Structures are given as structure tokens and as C-alpha cells.
Image (cartoon, rainbow, N blue to C red; front, side, top):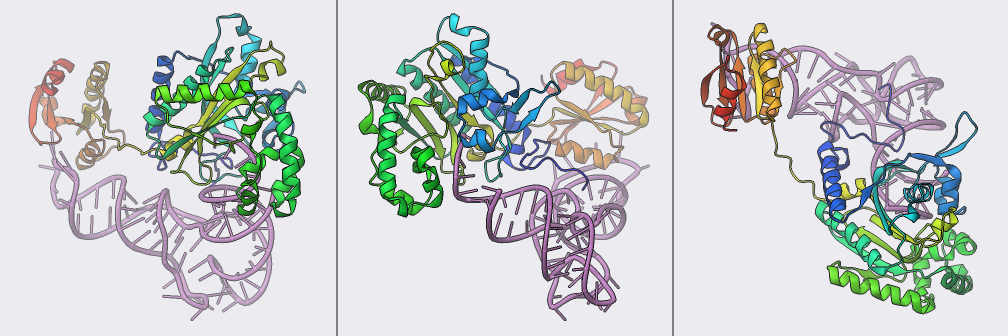
Length: 423
RNA sequence: GUGAUCGUAGCUCAGUUGGCAGAGCAUCGGGUUGUGGUCCCGAAGGUCGCGGGUUCGAGCCCCGUCGGUCACCCCA
């Protein structure tokens, strides 16, 4: 084996085995997503897969893992520091600011789908290049926008057949809330430092809230007694959370409030949410997102609120029931003489123009082999053209399920076939 | 980045204490001078991931390396 795909990547290819390698499943997600976004009135954004590295540092936070150890960095020939995008939100916000969309009617609702890159070790449901579908709503602080975004995520997953899903919801308050809560939490954790796992201990100074994500039993035992952010929320944040809850109930999205839900990115404020599936492995988050009311301003725009989600297409496919593919060809051409190939090609071309799915043998197969191929491609009909048919300017139409055969006029071309197959 | 585990035909996998590289499925052909799904026969298909080492001899033992899988960290 000479070449392999780069570490942590995968191919979508004809005959792909795993769900995320199957082209027809990707086609389905794209179809479902586009249809849903049209109904919710979101317009598409197509953005570069690389940006100035600085953009991601400013957005995700200098201390975040994504920035410190997971970015694919490179320098172009002009000496610019660039990075393959590790997430979608910063690019969308940059675009919103760059094109002055804050001056348009608000909110601006957009969606995107494309590859994201993170330099990390892969495991089930995690790749160095993975595809995210995301939405961002910029310019409105309305809690009902949060409801719309969460319900959109939920419906996307539901339509795709994601199994065993639970939506978790929390409110992290504004920066002020956190500036009161975090010292309190840190103080508490410090008192129990001896019982924490090494990773959590290391996080104590930098970002104690992420201790909640630890999978260590000992650490979780300590956290059972820890102060929760709910008690520190401002009236505003509390009202926002309850408005979101009422909204989710109104639109019929099941959810659970989880006060221990924290998110890894620095820019989140107020609402955060995460959709998890029991059908995945350790990486069980299918999609997640939250509000980022300070981000637009931090990136040089006006003080505009925003909210969005990102969801991993590979994880959607992994967590969904892959439906059996039933569709096949309308016609497979069996050519039994070299002179039959051109008339077959011409007829196939006419039938394709009429919308029929057709294919021919390009492998110089035997008669038996060509019928076998007709069978494999699930063709409804085989059209046989050989010496006998050519001599009479005819073709033989074989119904592949009944075995019934009819002789048609080859000279008449597509209309005769269309009539016989009942289109 | 850390740890565990696995790399043999396109796929799934056997391969004994180190002794001639195998099976099933898939592919192609034949049985049927032009008829598929079942059946029978045959063919083709391999630097045993790669590089070193030990040995008379390595798919097998040792070291390194690359890659896959799973978990941690983190995240979609």
C-alpha cells in the first residue's frame, strides 16, 4: 500500500461501509438540512476553511485547548499566520462584521456546512477533519431565538433518526455572574484539592468550571457538594432561562436543565445547550451551542448578541439508523455484439434525457456477466441488443423481476421503450 | 499529547513449539455458441503495514516506526 489518507481523516466513497463513509447518507443529511433551513428561513453562508489564526485565538480564548493545541497552523508566502478553521462560529461572525450585516434587518439568520479541522487523536466519532452543520443568529437577545435554534437542532437530529437523544440546557449568566461564581467554585475545589484527579487540579486556576466535565469518579463525588451557578444568576439570566424553558415546552422539545453543563469555549454567555446520544461512545455529544453576546464586539463589531449551534455530521450518521437503500436502475443495457454498443449508447442517452437511470457494460463482460450486473444494479429492465436484434433493427426488453421479454423497434428509439416500461 | 489494543488477498478472518502463505465472501470466466438472483467447476488476486535485529530459517520472537480501533485530555 503506497499512499494512505492523512491520519485522522476518512473517505466517503462508493460502497463505503461505515455510515459516515456512505455517499447516499451524506446526500440525505444535506437534503434534510437544506429543507429544514428553508422552512426556518435561514440563508446559507459559504466561508473559507482557513482564516487568520488570530480570529480563532480572539474567539475561542487564548487558553482554550482548541487554540493552544488543536489548530492546524501555517504561514502563507506573504508571512500571514493562518489556521484551518477548528469551528464555524468565528468565521460567520467575522463575515457578519466585514459585510456590515449589523446594519441590515435583525436578526440575521444563517447556516453553514463544511469541514472543520482539529489536530487531535481520533477515536469513535472524532476525526481531525470532520464536517459540521451549524447555524448562527446574530442581532437579537430574544430568548425565543434560543428556542428556535435549539428546536432546529432537535428537529434536524430527529429527522435524521438520531437515536436515544437528550437535550441538556443551562444558563451560564453573563460575565459578571461568572466573575462572582468562579472564585467561589475555585475556593471550594481548593479545599478538596487532594480528592481531585490531576487534570482537574491543573485546571483549578485556569478554568475551574470545566472540572464538571471530568470523568473521574472521585472528582465527581467532590462536585456533588459544589456550589452551582444557578444560585449566582442575575434576575435577568434567571428570567431568560425560564423563558427558554417555557418556549421549549411550547414547541415540544424535550429537555433537561443541567446546572453542571459547562462549555469549553470562552465566549459563551447565558444559554448553553448540548444534545447527547446514548448511541455513541465516549464522544456522545451530537450537537451543541450557546449564546455569545460579547463575541461580535470582541471581534471588532458593534455590541450585538448572537447564538448558534454546531452539530457533527459524522456523529449524526453514527447515532442514526441507516435506512436500507432500495433504489436501482431503470434500465441496464446488455450488448452482445461490438456493433450493438453505439446504438445502445445512443438509446441510453435518450432515455437519460427523459429522466431514466441507465447504465451499460464497459468491462467487456460475457452475456452472463452483463445480466449478473443488471441484477446487481437492481435494474427493473434489461435492454438486450445483439446480432439477432441488429439484423431486425430491434431490441429486446426484459423485465428483470418476471423474466418476461418483449421485442421493440430499435429504430423508434426512446418513445417505444418509455411506452413499454410505463413511464 | 497520554494509555491500551490491533495491522496477513478488495472485505471478514485462520495460520500450531519459528519450517513451502490459506479459507469464506466479493471479482472475472466456464458449466448454458446470447439470459441474472440458486448450484457446480476454475482463474486471478499478497513486498504478511514499513524498517531494522535475533536465527540455518521470521507472518510468528525483539526493537523502532507508520496507521487503525478504543479510552483519557478535549470536543461536533
